[in-house]
Length: 177
Image 1 (cartoon, rainbow, N blue to C red):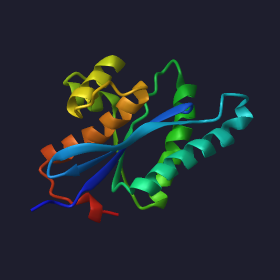
Image 2: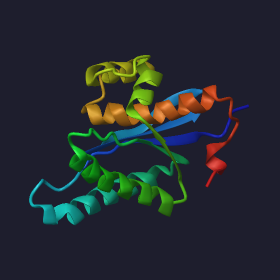
Image 3: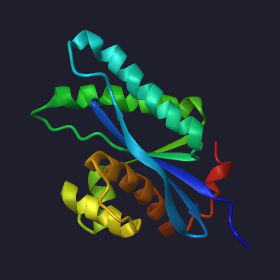
Image 4: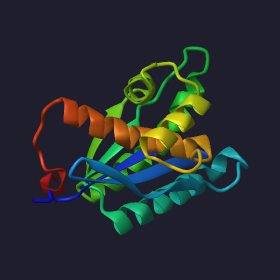
């Protein structure tokens, strides 16, 4: 007897380029429904921040409305003490993605980058190419996902699936929210 399909959307937040990937799990078989990037308007002046965020928001909303994920897995922000402004700017982008999910009553989970990398490659400090190759292997793709933002987003979604599976949870994510 087949189980109800579950859809997980992974997001690799970025202010210029945001990667996303939607996977579906049926009977422990994972397949990609869609993966790509949303690009904000080109970098101009700081006054364009609202336009850039609106473009990112609208792009992610379009994907959410099309595929209706039951959970969104987002990479947590990493704030380097030498570059706090970068974390603040990235927080703006991450915030619009969390808002989009909340408006659709979609559960949001966050994982730090090292946890995502470790769950996919076995190494918490894997580089971008290692992540792309791991995604190619894990999802049985013919080519590496490009750009790396797509691989990172798919990895975030797959990390949630692996984490949920190993935790022994029997929650049907289609019924959450």
